[in-house]
Image (cartoon, rainbow, N blue to C red):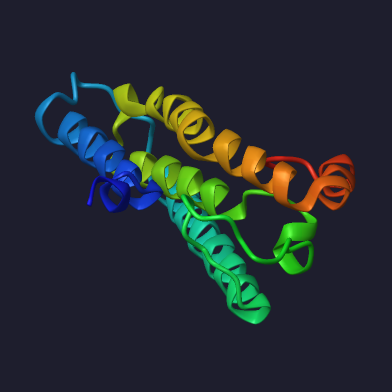
Amino acid sequence: MLKWIDMPPVWLAGFLVLAWAQATWAPMGLSLGGGWVDFAGGVLVGGGVLLIALAAMEFRKHKTTIVPHETPERLIQSGIFKRSRNPIYLGDALILAGLILRWDAVLALPLVPVFVWVIERRFVVPEENRMRRTFRADFARYCEKTRRWL
């Protein structure tokens, strides 16, 4: 049961609740500005959703697991995975950043790098270690040509 609670969307939801709470109950009179911030936030959220959708399509196409605690049966190197080894986590970070901007939660901006750090430690590093053991040289070559985030 705990394995299913310790999932990236749950962590994202927790960070979003913190950002929303800051914007709602402790804005401290701070603001990032006008319409351009809403627009930028929308672009970030849309980009994040697009990255996640593209990655999910690749998982489906290659018929392997998208679950972070499981070892995939295949190493995906096509589609969005040519550009980023972690497009779903990158999408999560973009969604967090975008909603922080949309909610004008200025004091919550430091949550973005904290979220990335948590995701990297909780999910990315263990996943990469499992993939390194499973796919060996193929994964090493993939890491040489594709960056972890961008």
